[in-house]
Every structure is written in structure tokens, then in C-alpha cells.
Image (tube, rainbow, N blue to C red; front, side):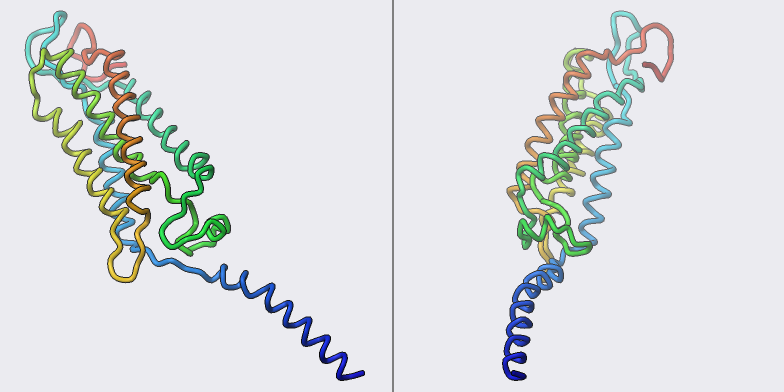
Length: 230
């Protein structure tokens, strides 16, 4: 009788071990990603996005103003800024969850478990960083093109180009590199496809938003020498 009890107990323990082992292994799965490059991507994203929406609208002359280059800050720039923020959140939350594109080295189950510090806390594609950074570049490009050709008669302003296009473009490139590199034994934060899709869709979205805003909002503040206007 004791032998039978021991056999049953051993069998129960074996079944329990088989059931618990995969969960234990899944909970302990950790994918190493370089934290320094993660910080670089965060900083470049913030800098590139901020400069575009902090830039004044630069234009040359106007039928209703004196001739020369002028810069005006518009509080209405919050409209495209908030639009791009909403689109970025849309990508980061429902779209990523629906596509279930995992980060390199992660499975769908590990990502859904969202274990802290596992490197698999969220899905990877489309890349939110790429979408936001290239979205800012697209928005700045749209604003610069409209201000140059519609409101400045095609005259080129170096300062406007640097602030609206060159700087955010450089920041976008840095963000893209930072999200895709994997030094040593680490894995990248996103794969090339996730970064590319995020970047392309972000740039096109930003270009549409920036162009529409610049077309609807003239760069001048009307009569007077006010630097800030609605």
C-alpha cells in the first residue's frame, strides 16, 4: 500500500513539474537590449520633435507687411503637435496590439505576459520611435515647403531649413540607428522592417499634417510687429 501511495505521489509531482516548468521558464526569459542606445533614441526623438514645433514660421515679405524676412511664433502650432501625438499613441497602443509584431528575440506569449525588465514588455512594430521622429521631420518639411514657395515666393531661408528640416532629419536618422543597433550579445529594440514601416508611415503622416497646417495658417500675424500670435 505504501509503495502504491509513493508511486501515485511521484506521478502527481511529475505532472505538476511538467505543468509548472514552462511557466517558470517563460517568466524568467530575458532579452538583453542596450540601454545606452535606448537613451540615445529617447533623447534624439524628444529633440527632433521639439525643435519642429518650437520653430517660428519664417517667411519673406507679404502684401500686408514690410518687405524682408520675418519670424512669427503661432500658438496654433499646438494643433499639428497634438495631432501627431494622437497618431503616435494610436500606433503605440491599438495598432501594435492588433498587429502583434514582436520585438527581436520575443514571442507573442512572452510579450503578452509583459514581465518587467524582460525586454519583451511590448510589441515592436510599427516602431513608435521611428513613427514619431520621422513624423516630426515630415511635419517640418511640409511647413518649410509651404512657407518657402507659397509665402516667400520661392526664396530660401537657411535658418528655416535647419530648424524645420535638417535638424529633425538628423535626429530621425540617429533615432533610427539607435533603435536598430545591437552591440555585443544584445538584441535590437526593433527589427529593420518595424523601423522602416514606422518611419515611412510617420513621415507621410507628418508631411500631410504639416502641409495642411501651413496652408490653413498664414505665417504672418497681420498688422503690427507682434512676434507671438494665434
